[in-house]
Length: 159
Image 1 (cartoon, rainbow, N blue to C red):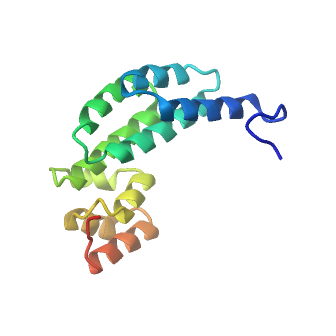
Image 2: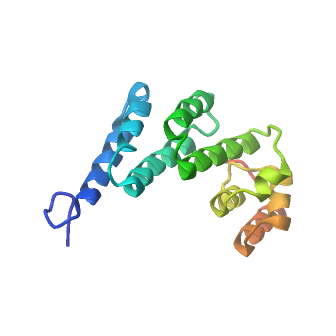
Image 3: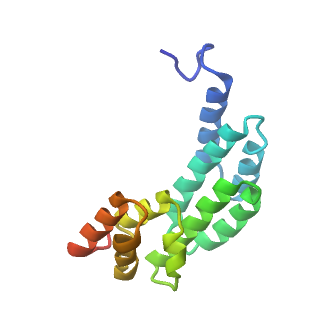
């Protein structure tokens, strides 16, 4: 079995672990610079994965916090040339919009990724009957449609 400091573990696995540790410990002021540095790694897929993991963690923690918007704007600049990461951040922003009961368009929800639809249908932060109804009716997968329908029937409750 390999561990984080063994020689038989691939170098990219060790870098990935170090990147995750550094991103978790980074100050808000240095976050964008560190993420940009990680994205310069020679293994683009690994770098995207490390930054994506960090993006998900930070977006989830800041979702209903007023600091989400400036954080997202700053992070958008760092990931602008990474399509998957840019889409994930846009979808976190859409999730925030729905959670805060701000205006959104049905097409945004129905054209969103499977990840987004599943997250919106199952997370307790989304309580919008309109969003859940749309997902129950037009969600891309049976799993999404069933989860959203269940939440509607049982009354979506905020946590």
